[in-house]
Amino acid sequence: MSPFVIQILLFICILLFIIYLIKLINSFKREVHISRFSLENNLPKKSIITSIDIRVWHIVDFLSNGLANYKIINKLSAKYSKYILKSEATYKKEINYFTIKLLVIILLLIFNIISMCFNLFPVNIITIIVSILVGYFGPDLFWQYLFQKRVNKISKDLYLSIRTITSSLNNGDSIKEALKYASNIIKGSIADEIEKIADDLEYGLSLANAYKRFYKRCKLKDIKYIYKAIEYGEVLNLSYSQIFNNIYNYFKNNYELEEKFIKETDIYNYLFLIVLLIPLLLYIFIAFFRPTYFNKLYTGYGIFVLIGIILAYTIFIYIVKNLLEAKDE
Image 1 (cartoon, rainbow, N blue to C red):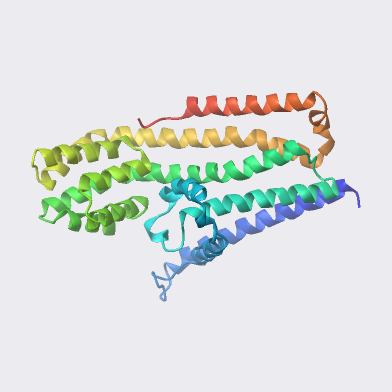
Image 2 (cartoon, one colour):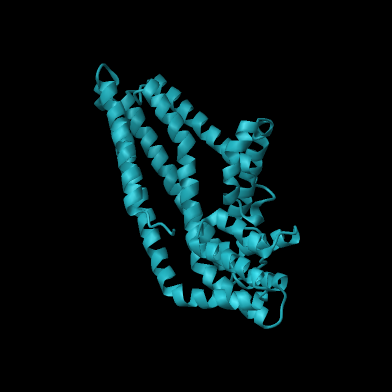
């Protein structure tokens, strides 16, 4: 069997597998939707997707055993704490994200070995280096994209959370009761952050410091305004009800501007993702069906051309990211 036929078969198998996954996910969504109208509906019951997700993270956690003994790995993994929701803290750890990156690198290297054995893809030192870089930084881009979507949702729901907390405080509730009320009323990512703020208060942190930690996780200027306003209010000996009424008035005046900002940010994120992926997918597509197309780039002066292309592409991505990025600060 010729390498070209093997390539076609592999491509068809991968395509069929992707179609199967899409259909499986859609069927799960329909099952969850239908179950909401079932007479035997049980809300606390975990969905199949959630159960699979938890099982996968437990496996990753098992593979992470031993990595925590290395200080440098713990240091590199610390930045992933912002990706973990409070509800996920029982089965997700920061170091698990680093383990996933190692697994992706290993899988890409195995793919290189298989490609070398069947002459499916031009494998050399440049390809191996690119595979390692993609395996290490690729998951970071994906997680950051998901996190940015969550931050955008938090920014959108921040006004609602302030309004709910202010209403509760005006009814005579304490700040802890107001936070608990808001986390029960509001759903989504903002509820998870409110629960983290409540936990910080239980550990003895001030409300201003709790919101400051919230700001460090999301880097939204409105959250910075909140903790600054709380700090100033505490200095002026204002009640939490007075402080949050002032904050609410600020958010009420700026709500429409925030809505516009979120829409622009979503568009820019999608544009950046398209700009980032299209050249890479084009390269993989051509190299998959015509491995010899790039042969001249791996010999003689072609290597310098390849390095130049990689550098130019990196600079291009950096420029586009800065042009399209709608910064909140």
